Length: 279
Image (cartoon, rainbow, N blue to C red; front, side):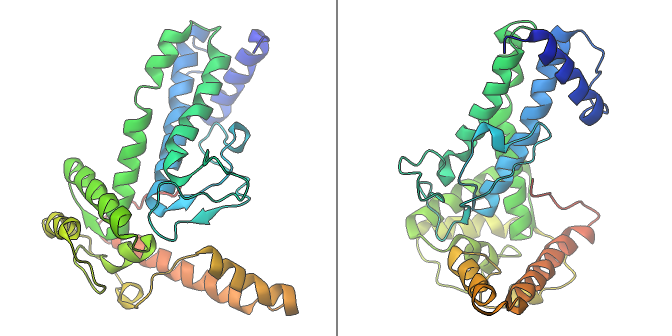
């Protein structure tokens, strides 16, 4: 942080090679710094929103596990939610729940703020703070859009917010497996399962007014169980590899995931839209 010239050189290099379609790498540093921060924040917000929509828990959200283009890495003790639980943690050592599922937006913004600290020499804190004002709205927008895509429906943004809110409330109170909810309600109507209670009735009512995405193949969603990777399944896939170098179950699981992804993407492709990325 004390090497302003070095930081400026690195910022311009990064913009030139990764953000040249959006930013001018030769702009004055005081103008470029908040624009650069905003672009980085948008990518990380989108990634964090994708995790939340997938029920994914990174597990070790240190600042060095993000990069400026929005990707994350070093997943280590990752998990997918078994049930919807904002306090669910992936890392065995995360006793305080610092990187729990529900705290991932906070941890992601914290990482972006550490980048902002490095950019303070170029115009002060006020422009940088302004550049981060949209972080949570961007994250929530990506989350809501992806949830609707996972559910196979198309709704206006306001209804998307309502779907996400009611879904999370119902999932939290009933502790229904998260992936199974999205599987059972794909297409906007309940395909199977016992979803009782006011929250689920509200959820059904909101989805009832949604436009169903066309899709090429319903077969993946007509099956009884969701395509998912709870840790128990991951361990079961690893056991034959460790015991007898048998990779067939893993390859079969990969094929299944690819088929499921193709079915989801097909729902968007035939409507002329683009499926959201996963970060």
